[in-house]
Image (tube, rainbow, N blue to C red):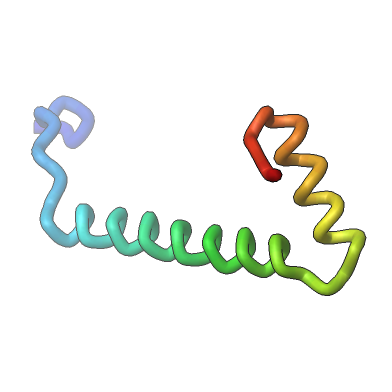
Length: 61
């Protein structure tokens, strides 16, 4: 049977573990960036994050 005609199979445990690891790393990096900018000493980075919150209609005050 040609490989392109084989039926699709369930993802393996190894593949799911890889996806979960990537999602966890992405969430951790996002939190680091969020808190790093939110409490930044640089007024440029802090004001940019503040402006993004206003543009996306999220409360900040």
